[in-house]
Image (cartoon, rainbow, N blue to C red):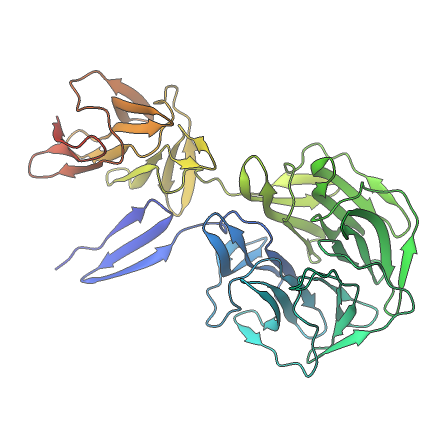
Length: 449
């Protein structure tokens, strides 16, 4: 009979063995770092729904849910839209559905999907906008989801206004229309039953403010944020807030609020880093806003999570290692935890030490740590109740050092060692009572006693 046990895989995936059957289960506490994704607050179920976007591994088609009590969880619905980026989402308050439209999956899309809390359904509207990457927001005055602007597959920027009534799209023909644009910001102003639109791109960055009252657009000639695109807007604390985006001066990290008549720049104590292409969603139950992800030119795709309330930003990202795919990791059955060291992601080599136990990560802060590296070997030596790590690589430096980890402390072992190498394998051999090392870029086999 096989005894039940678990092995934790480096990329954040858990495999459990029970008898002769094995299954993979993800243990990722948050979605992958990403940009140009979309999200909306599902009022009927008091949770945020996030879908798709672009990550280091390409365009995604995953659905994630977030609530203040449960945090992030992967929904894994039976049906879903195709993997895509630059789509739009909004909550349809009256019908208890989240609406998703369009985007890009290798081609521009014109499909409408509805989320009911557990699964996606492809809608079949009698009429629909053409393929595009627009913005959506709920229109409280009309009780419908409103779409404005976007860019189509021919690179044409649009200034059409459409509304969704739960079954079909209808083009609205207001007397006044903002100029064509895409990558603008748009949010529901719940306090005034309006929709606020700011900025975007029409061949240049825009800095105009427009308000939709249920039947028409009105331009507000007021000072405000610098001209920008790919910023995000949401409702929090009785006002619409705006964060980040891309401008002629680069990516931004400023916070602004709209009170129905004017913009005011806020001065929070801390704030998310500069970014664009993030999501910013109003949690109308808690009265705050939630930000996730985005793009930063220096660090690439972002996976951090922030909340905004009372004029202040608060980091809410669960701790997790920065190494992805090239760290070393093994399991300590005595302490019932796994240890991870190093790794390489977004052009940064890490020397961080992490522990995984009970479904969550904890960063350890030993007084001494091995130099940063990727692809070392690591194994738990059961005979001596300690981890043994050897080798690895950092840029053009190939390590040939041996380190031991026990009692929360790293200590370098001054011993005869194999040639410096990386990408090798290490495992504890029960029969020999020793750690075996094999292969790597230098080849060879060695035993560490």
